[in-house]
Length: 350
Image 1 (cartoon, rainbow, N blue to C red):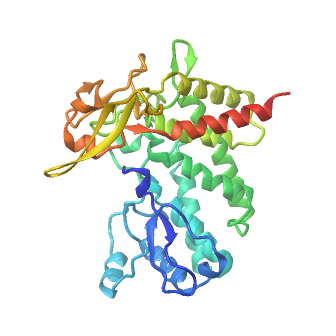
Image 2 (cartoon, one colour):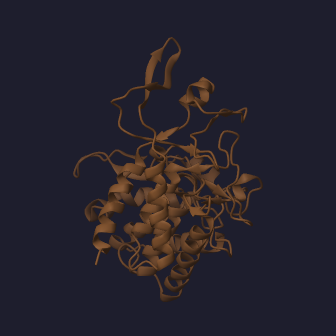
């Protein structure tokens, strides 16, 4: 589970009319002229090859890269289905194929997108959550996965499918109905996962047990804890819902109140060069803008940090350099979500 900057989306990096250089990055090209062109169709053909029998896709692969014949043959012979919703996988491919099909109606692109939608529907637990991998992979991967916005991205795609707008206007009524039902179950799961502390609703963990809804372990440095970045993604999704029910409004208000309670002040997360590369560290800075720790200890709301030894630390500088450099221990994302919450709240006033 990498940083959101590694999410699998497509970025048009060159102007139309030139030779396009496309890479997996953070934005999906939406220009109809480009989507109808040869480069977009070549990428769509790649996605057909990368798609697993389950209907999903793997993660962390540059699927815009042209494939040699030997690479294509290798993809056709894959035996292990490694499909996932982690790091933007599957949801990104569905959206891209849907957009290409809208402007270049190749039936195989529609069929692949439909199989992807069916994959998301099949992967959902009866309680509304999604595991990180489907078919199920043993280990923490079975947990309900909010980590890196995996479940939120899934809900956003299915909501778009259910609404039937662009780029999913072509989806049949049966799938739309199933998508709407899946989104309803997913929202119910979100509400059940919201952690209660001291009798008050707070926020969410990155992973929740798929049976009990309790916060759960993932990797050794990802403890059961309230997760600011994932909670910000969930709150942003809830804010986007039209006419939210009272229980959703309560969840929104409570999460926003928790965010206002736990920011970190006087700390700057920065980096400096070293003889062997780079070191990321936290330093005291009274002028620094408020930020939020990635994890907050259950019951205390203290920022908590762990290395690969799973030992609890309350100072990020105490964990090993490899984990300090290799993980996003602070996030400013809650700030923008709180601004969106303020605007949402203002519109709801009588």
